[in-house]
Image (cartoon, rainbow, N blue to C red; front, side):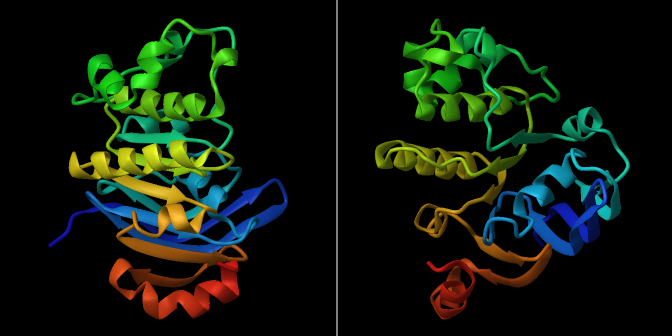
Length: 234
């Protein structure tokens, strides 16, 4: 039996008066790569932000490794072993690449060493002393992911990591996700780039208007292409 690392039931979330998520249910098993698909505004990023406590009001249940997290503040969610890489990356311009890398606290044992991270991302080793503003978009994205790998987080929430990047960098990020899966990490992807996500994910959830409207496994991908064409235009 696969172990449920993340289980969301009846999740509703708001930004102020705006009711964004309407009863989201999803499960992510340990060691899986799961992708949330949907148009812009479907609620995928809000789902990620709700998991880590960065929306307004939340109702429902978010269990991380069996522990209820719906009422926890973000720093306590992180200490349950969750690493969130937001779409905006959040690189500190005034710090060097290595200073950015060392900034987050270690939240659990078993995080990657700086040496292991530089082995996975040779570009970052070369640019270790460069200010954040001097890094390319691809290097900034690698750094944003690398920061959470050092912390000991085992559940990684990655929001649009391929957006706006050159194909060669996107390919490197795909290799990174395969490596992380082989190391036993659990990954939730929000992706607009279906070609990037399709071969990586074990399972897919399709969102529309703040709800899950379809879920299917990698082996069912071909049977669901017509539906994805309708929802996503892929």
